[in-house]
Image: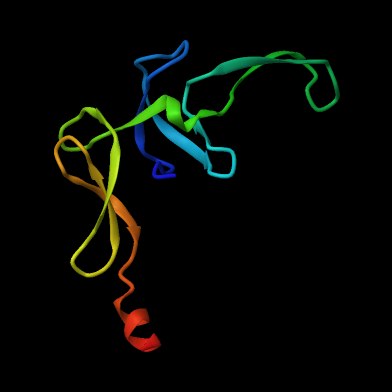
Length: 117
């Protein structure tokens, strides 16, 4: 999964369509992400010693990663993400629209390749 925590994304489907928000957490094993302020639901809580008031608590649930697009920092448009291998052997994320670099996926492995030979 190429989306990371802290990325700005735009929701492309569902009730929150068109919303731009920050990614709170990523669950790559399920293919889901938690986006700030999106997919809010109510959890009805009974009164207890821990929660003496009771009532409805609003919380966010994870949405599928395929329902969001990353917003590019340079062109400010929602875009697909590509991967490019840089000159030093590392992998970087790129914007498919303007080809700007969006962050490092993997640091260079040049030292590891030389050591194995």
